[in-house]
Image (cartoon, rainbow over all chains, first blue to last red; front, side):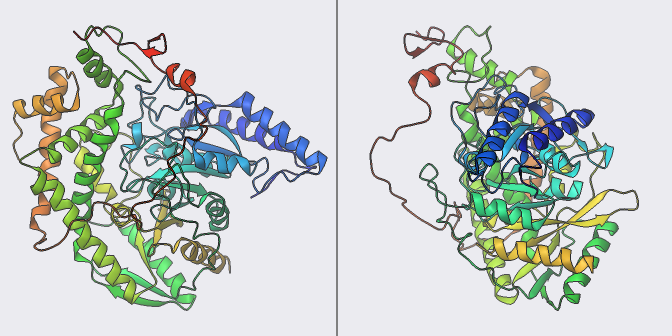
Length: 461
Length: 95
């Protein structure tokens, strides 16, 4: 990543990024830009450099921030109406760590409202377009962040991954993305979706850049009791040499071009001397159903805080307290938010709790066990990220289940709390970007990024 | 799985949504499809399996019970409310 120097100033870098952001306005990458504050911060970095002070490991690097990270620049809306007026009085720990190293947020990126979705079409502000084909979706929910990196507006962007929301848009747009081990990066100051699977991660152009960002952001935070002590910075990466492939991985039908991209990547790994191990993981086909029980349950609970009382949007015509809740929430949430909240309340309600919610938590145990058994036989697993390449805008909007099915290969990791790295894997004959993911056991994030970097080096040969 | 209009109204009440009739109708068919899909989980044998409610490796993370200075003070928090008066958040009359 290029950092600011005396010759190559932060102000120039930030100006260039802002210009590009405006040039690509029709992709709808950003929901807001922080022009004034970004340029002011850039000038401060340049002054530090001039004085010979340490400007940080990300000095003057412009970045794009998913709209669900709280910070004092602009409004944090989670691309929703109910948070449209919300100006955060606090800063997310991850943002603070990036900015302490000199990184500069140029704007907030579009996302599915509250990160509910796989295409960024559920944004209250309208969809983001795919970086390589404007008739197709950006993927989601961190669609804007993926496209910001893919279009070269910024060298990196933040994202959140609850069921694939970093890896899927990364592969739809041909960039690198990491979903870390659960608990690696503090979630303090990030709008909650599903607390047992939510993870903070990044998009970048290379595995080396992701490694630097992980190194900066990993670690325990007294404001997030679910953060692990920093295992990332200290640990030398293990050397991975056994790759697992899931025998019946065509969980749903995998597109032939994705299958070809997967096979090609496997050949690259073999040419690096990796041994291939076949895995039998039949329970993974239930992961999507498990996900769409547990996650809505947690959503229904987490999103109950948006009540029109303490912050955000309030319906002004409401005459009673009940009407304030009911009307503000009804106006403030998108249809997909409502589906998930209601499904959550369904699976948690008496009479259905055991058959759905508790059953899903038991199934989660079965899925975790299958990963544990798999990682006794191999160091990491290679799978596609999605069964199909980026779909057309509007293709799945009228059928929620068909949209959910696109998540079938990304959600199992989140249920198990294990890390995944999405890496580019060429493109279709129509120039649609493809990706595959490297999946490892807990705390193998650094080793996965090393494999990702080694693959890129091998492909350059 | 069939979801009745009454069940939709009950879930809307639990969710605190004042749905319009059109919204309730489309949610009814969406929820039927989604619940139909997630019901496939019944096939998986989970007899004797313990549930996993969370995947964090640690338990009981303690901190000292001390007040720490916070980035946002009372005024900053009150300023977020759609209506506030005399250091209190204002809502329509309850009783």
